[in-house]
Image 1 (tube, rainbow, N blue to C red):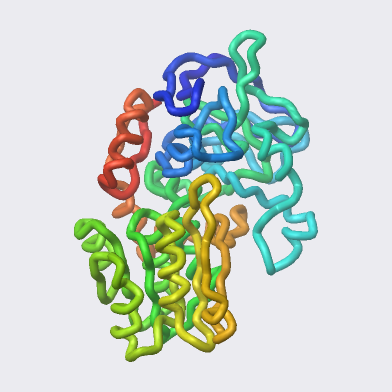
Image 2 (image 1 turned 90 degrees about the horizontal axis):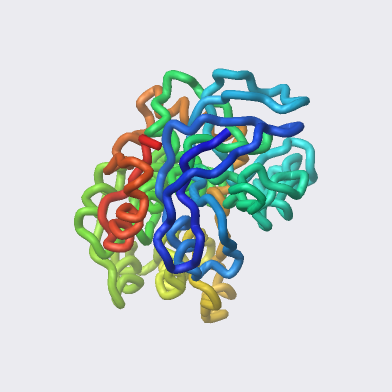
Length: 368
């Protein structure tokens, strides 16, 4: 079938909106008609050429939601008409990692995804004889996509797809960092660096976990206002004195849990140094630039502080995303507030520019 899609032809250049060909699903694969897709910083990061693992040509997009349109041979967990959220982090439920509660990093198709391929080592996207790779195994800046069954989360059809698509990446990364990686304890003090979608997700997750104090730091007052709406109890504009201010605000101790959601190694270091001596945990969710290194003074670790990473918030997507959708449907999680703009696919390059200017929280493509 022919579909419209946004193709990264060359790093550092605008995406090309045009027609590509999409083959039907193979064994274990599913054809999804996209209804919505968030425009994430990771898409822009790859398009810029800063991502050392990036490749082109590829159809970008990974924060998608849609409706199942066709099934490949052997698919048993989904049916035509099911509403789904796409997962760049799959869950086969059978590999060593999926059977462990220590990680969400499924091993089943990891190598193929890193190469932009589907599990059989090929692609379903092409222009004539030219094959086009699948970005993060998803490629959701398009009218439709073909993905492995194990990389789709079946959700409540009552949930609006242009809202719950945020759970395909940013929102779950932040919420999960608080709930599944750090496991924030009730009554604790939390500090979140960055109030984009991931940071706001961490604020919301800390609130759901029952944190008593949630301090949020950002460079934009508008985003700090959003953080307060999602549960932040204290906010301030970040700077060189951020660590000193958080330590002072916590009686000289630091926060029990800190979260970094900016991608800046300088801020990552501040998040580590703001964590409480003895047991403070810093969870890093931001993606740093090519070749950047996090420098940590060893005494911060020797005195009990810990550092954890959070890929997709530690969430096993097929299990956790439906649970988060249910929280939204019940009114316990305000995902709608994360969506600040809805656009057509043709405006995706404008969305990148707005993101570069730190405008809004999440732009969602709703017209393809």
